[in-house]
Image 1 (tube, rainbow, N blue to C red):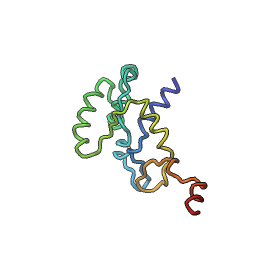
Image 2: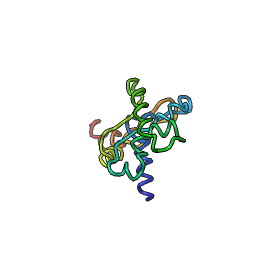
Image 3: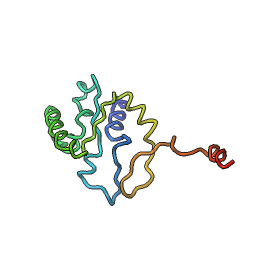
Image 4: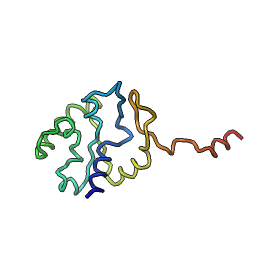
Length: 132
């Protein structure tokens, strides 16, 4: 069960497209919208769609799960035209692999940051080859 909880939490809050805000940029609304809805297949049924309605959960955390679909539809209709609704239709297991390969760190704690990948950092041996 711990694996499921950690995986869900990681996938709900981590994506190359989801901004990370420093103290100078963070607001409650920006923080609440820094999550992403994804389809989890059969697991949506067992986990009351907490992953596919997670943006609504962040905005209305006291809302009962059985209202989450209705709230998500309204939130999506309002936020998506403004570019503020985060949804990734990629199956969760493929998203998990992509995130594991691309979301390793943010460069700082100020402003608005996006995840970077260690794969983007040139290795010393590669730099030596370029210099030669």
